[in-house]
Image 1 (cartoon, one colour):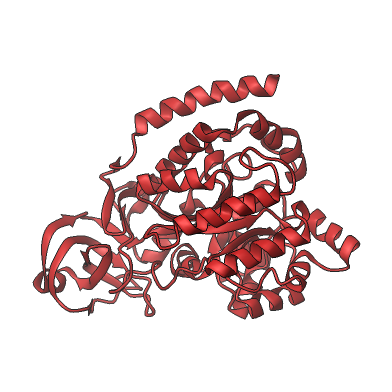
Image 2 (cartoon, helix red, strand yellow):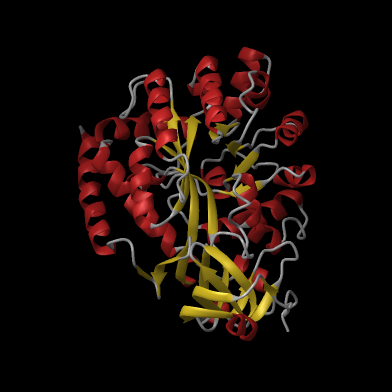
Length: 455
């Protein structure tokens, strides 16, 4: 008997349904964190209308289509709270370097020589392909040409918060911060009520923007009731430079200028003292914890245990795949987040498996401000769910669903993905993306990028 097993239903109404998905286990991530054996989820349109034992769901809803994924876990789609999706084409271009050297000597030059609309489109397609195959249904992005990222993300059928980068030096899409902000307003208007895309403004960081630019970005986001996404206290250098020049930490400086007064997702948040954490708590700022990136760049260990004690919502992010992580694998992030907290605290009970799953689902949804729509399998929420096979040797036997998800299962165990009620991955076959074509194009870009770096 699973230690997390509960077998009663949560049914909202009855009647017709477009799709019923059934599995050996349904991990709901609802307020009671119920795990239902021989469970099912009923979907009508883009919404979940019923969750419970499969016999109860089948008896309550008349479905146009039923999918039984068999010996598998059905759970909410995973939420990647911090990415730079088009950078998938820079995967492995430079590794094992400090952040500033990596950026200034490799990434910025590579971007200057290669970024254009086609690069963004193909990089986004490659990222979406990888994320879908790994069970990610929603991601938060920060990069350039985000209007094109939005087009490709919608084409893939994925959900995303897409942050147009604002940065003080000329970049591929906009030569000035003012030009970027002007384009941002058009981006907000175009996707104001989109079912899948939430536009966001993304001043890169405190140290790469003037204060007036960040304040203008905040005002624009608040005017449209959209999020602001920003890197925060990622390195000790960022923290010490801010304290030396301003007498304030980066968080305190952003707080003083009003940049945290609204819907905000802060990435990394590593070098934070108690005052900084109290500020994030007071401002209801969401945090994207990026354990792989923080470890690989030796940036530090974010104080997530202190954040939990304050009720700060913390999700999981992979960061970009161009050297700060190299993949978009949220199963790895769940595993690493839990183990990093344990080794840092010296407490094997720190950040248990269930908490790691929460960070990738309902807690991640809170962190990015979409918990009223996604993050759990409950009637009334959007139908974003994944099936994770239990057929592989590393998945047997199973005593606890949360433990299995975090410490045993892999991204490659994901077989099926439903987003907004639409099946976009079936039996590991992408239904919205041309996988062979994307991989062939990635190979061609590899040659182009390598040649550009030799120039």
